[in-house]
Length: 487
Image (cartoon, rainbow, N blue to C red; front, side, top):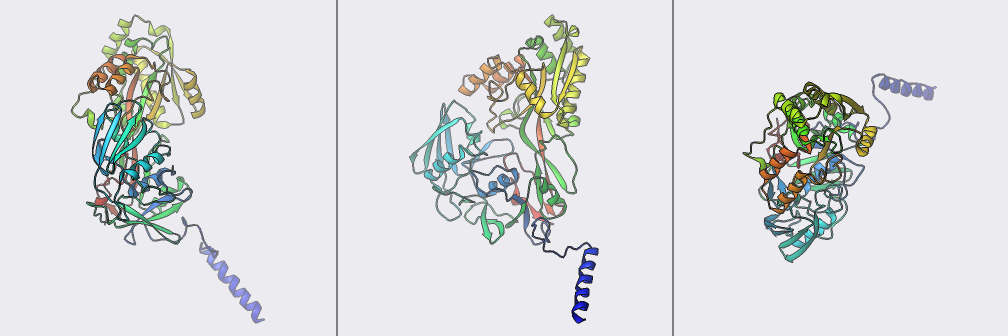
């Protein structure tokens, strides 16, 4: 009888727990288990993906790459204007197809000096890494001239090549998860707990936040919810989905190097005509595209280059919108645009670009064009671009930090653009040093092989208890982490 009574008591207790919404079973999901809030224990908590190692040369997830940026330095880092700032480098000379780099006196977190052997070893790993392969594709090789000097050989000349020397530097021969680096923080692991602590060997870095705890998440979709429920304190969204939804956190925009453009089909009966391309370029309402179509998460641009780029400082690039002048150009072309239809291709799965296409359609209709809207789902859109089934399409490319336009001039995203157009030829001259930047831009404005629309922004969200400038940049969302603190 006592055994029966005891059993009834246990069952009653379990039922009461379930009625209160408490699962009596053990919860081994780190995302749902009881944890300190994002900052309640005096540490910043950041999400990371446990699906891959925190290896700077194999990681591909955005959240892990952001964290790895705290652990490793490059020869250079980029400021908010994409200007290279020396870190492990003391200075460099770019001349033709070579880049000569002299190392500064810097140290790994274990106290050993960073040498040319370490840099050369890291470069070779970075060349084939998911994060660095694209920006290092113009770098053919590296040789060591002395213990603190290296020579990089380029495939083609590039006066802005230093912006690509931001690859992570590790010790010669190091491999695996979180090899020793020289970055702002140091990786530490205690059982299942992973955290970052300030690198005491890093000079000039004295943040308020001394420790960062890493919280494992299953997938990128969990990062936003992790911030909203207070498990983590920071979340960055590059808005590549084409939508933005407000979340319960403070949010700031970060300019990124994703260029959105209107491409002309150079084989098109109408847009093989330069005057018609100029007319379209002059009629586009870029202000409405950036502020309304992209909901303010974009910066309008008048050249193919990022408007934040240091090389454009003090240069007047504005193409004044002028519908009357655009109509004059159409008249000068001698083409009866009203007698022909033109197709405008857009990916309808991306709301930002779909709305941008609607503005462009209205702008062109006002000029007298008959615009047929081709709004396709992603797969069909991509196929149509590759087949040349359009007169115009809205495209996007993420440029490398040296603002390399090669992907547009005969490269991976150059669909519809004549690789032998005057702009492409002039761009080659710019890289070779036989013309100035404004010479290229002036040629581009005459030629208009494609119409620049805007550069997109990403959005950084953070817990209300975190304070600081929080003005990160494209290359480092934690750019100013030394200014961060808790309320």
